[in-house]
Image 1 (cartoon, one colour):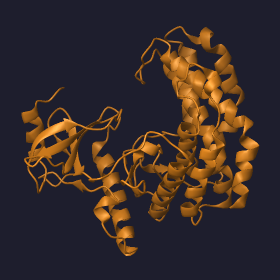
Image 2 (image 1 turned 60 degrees about the vertical axis):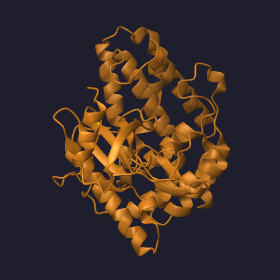
Image 3 (image 1 turned 180 degrees about the vertical axis):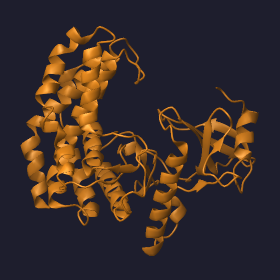
Image 4 (image 1 turned 90 degrees about the vertical axis):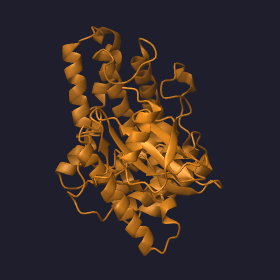
Length: 363
């Protein structure tokens, strides 16, 4: 439901703000939540207003509780470390007038955080920004590594559970709702050949050898705020911060940043692995994270890249078989194109596996 400017300002008035906005404008290019920035009478931006996508994040109370726990924990760590200008180094959310961390207008859920002036996100990745991103996410995980088990809830159950994702695919194959299985039989067979090898983390967890930790679960470079000099300010987009395996966080960065092609590239020949990005990110990450990681976790980090790429192949193919009910598509076979592009990147990662695994031995 589209809101008028007056309705937006009324929503903002439901929060405990020190500055009075007079207008709101669209901000950023997020795909899940609607994000806007406020403007005051002096033309300054002090706050960010977001409409939470409660169709994806169905438990908004838990979502905002998780975020409050995480940001408060990081704030305490930064204070103890003697950091200055802390409001620029961790997101600051503002409570509604009723004390909750969100406001429900009868139709949508809203939240407000402080705008960090002079900050920017990056869409392009290079070895320098990749190294800084690795440090940022490594430090983020390190600061949260002592949060007791059970403190945070799993905001999207089974989000990176490979066994669960494969079950969804098998269900989609059996149902064949859109009548597309014969078209993708070859890809489904290749996925099946790798299924056992790609369920290692769940098996190791059941054996007590791989523990769950607090992860960001969406480690793209554009989920980091940089200052004007290219230095990291803070990690943002905290909706998916929840318990999981560390393979997820490094794995999703490898999947998205080390691919020389696009996620949905129609020309598979453009898809290769940029190992310089992998090495730069991993170096930065390990500088911050090696103090809490186990030797097993360290050895499995490159496998995380193969795992998350395989997982995304499965998810795109599942959606294609189900008739494109989850991901937004721009053409009738967009999800199939995405799945084939991700599978090609998986094949390229498999070719580089020995070298990437070997790179971890220095730690």
